[in-house]
Structure formats: C-alpha cells, structure tokens
Length: 376
Image (cartoon, rainbow, N blue to C red; front, side):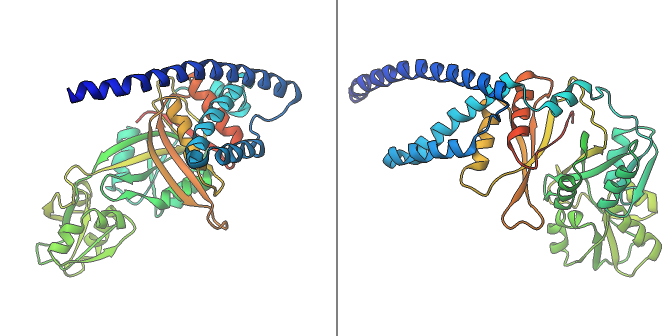
C-alpha cells in the first residue's frame, strides 16, 4: 500500500516533467536552426566559430539568474553551447590542415629504416620493438631524448618507447618529450613484464640495480629482503653492468631475456608486485600513418587555468560516444600553473563525427596537436 501511495504522489510530478520536456525539445531544435544560420553568416564573413567572451557573458548571466541552481544552470548551458559549436564546425568544415592530413596520410604501417630504443639488447623496449617490427634493424641509445633526436634526424626511422606501466603508472619523462617534440604515434603494443632477480654468481645479495620503473614495480620484494635499491638507466643495462663488473652482493632486476643475453644466474622469478604486470609501448614517427581500421587516437592541447575548462572539453568526447582511456597533464615549461594535456581515446579519424570533433578542438584549443590514430 505504501508503495502504491508513493507512485500516486510521483505520477502528477512526472506528468509535469514530461510536459516541460515536451516544450524543451522544440526549443532545442529551434536553437540548433539558429546555430546553422549563425554558421552561414560566419562562413560568409570569415568569422571564427568560437567566441569565448560572448559565451562567458552568457554563462555568467545565466548563473547569476539561476540563484542556488547557478552552477548547474551554467553546466547545462555550457553543454548546449558545445553542441552548437560542434554543429557550426561541422558545417564550416574547419580544421583544414587536419582534414588534409586525414585525406593524404599513408594508410599502411611504416617500414622503417631502423627502430630506435632506449637501453641495450634484452631490454623490454627491445622486446616491444621485435614484436612490432619483425626483422627490422634495431638501434639502441642511452636515454629517451636520444630516441626522439634519432627520429628527428632520420625521417625513415621510428622510435619505440614505454609510456605506462600497469603497476607503476606513467613514464612521465616520455610524456614530457612527446609534448615537446609532438611526433606522430603510429603504433602501440602491450608487453607482459616479468622481472627476475639476476646475479653473476649464486652468492648472497644485498643490493639491486635497475631502472626506476623496474625498482618501483618490485618494491615488495626489495623491502621484504632488505635490499638496497640503486637506480640504473635501463633494466637490461643493469644486467649488462652486473655481468661485466661482477660487483659483490649486487644483482640486477631485469627480464629473463636480458639475464640469458648477459649470462646471469636467475635467483628468483616473477618478483614484481603484480603478477599481471604490463607495460605499454608506443611507436613514434615524423610521418603520419592513419590506417582505415585504426582504433585509438592520441592528441594534446593546453587549456586556460579557469574553472570547468577541462570538464567542458571532456564532455564533448562523451557527447560523441568516445571513450577516454588515458589523460595525462604536464606543466608547460616557463608558465606557472599552465598545463598541457595528453589524451588517448578510442575512435577512428576517418569517421565523420570524430573528424569533426577533432577539427573543432584543433581550431579552438591553444597548443593543440593531433598525435595519431593507430591500433594497439
């Protein structure tokens, strides 16, 4: 009985809501028609779609008039404006440079002159490179920046770099370089990581050397065994050092492949904190490659340090049904409290709605760069 009474109380209110919604839809459609007229005028006179000062004035006025619902009303109108801008961009076919790239970029995966990795043979980057480019010559450099420099100097080369680990998180140094160089990302692969404790002999171990990411992925084992952790440039480089120098009481945390490559004894296997430990690697290139069946898009941009600016952008992906899989923010050098944002999301640039959204962001956002559309 109580439930029936509850429904009786809700019924007239729901009918009122339905009546209001019935009025809202025609008004929304009328507004979109006005948007299309505005787009035509802007096209004729070469006026940009985005008018930030006018939008701010409208949003401030709406928020003030809405009283206690001010923030919600502002968000509601922001969504309407974003939809209107997206329609205008679609009609004006903005983002000329990006549309040209979509039409002309190669659809086939690169056949590089060489593949450049950080570290030495046996590194996880080496494993990723072999999985991505079977038979291609692979070169090694000491640090991540030199991978980018090598690709900069040789347009036919590609670089393979780690960007994220399932246990230790982002490789921030690589994201900083992505935002600095803004090369295209043309491929990606996930590599299962199984760390081993490896030494030149079977004696007791008091000290371990490895890349900072490798150490952070094995903290539980290191702490449980009271080992001193020493950072090294690369997991395989650490294995090479232990094999060549044979320091007393020192072992490397590296892959089985690295241990076998440098003739080390494997003292313990699978010492990482998470058994399903995975590192994601990307391929960078100076030339774009946009396969017809690509499934992931990467881009970057900056935003003003104002309330709601990031939320406003992210809502536009949601409105297009695009699923964000990664967002990373990095400070812009020399600018206090200003950030570049890196985004990965599922999508295909050749889809008209997705292309229209990215072209709109290209025209609106400062420091915008389309970084690639590829499969993983």
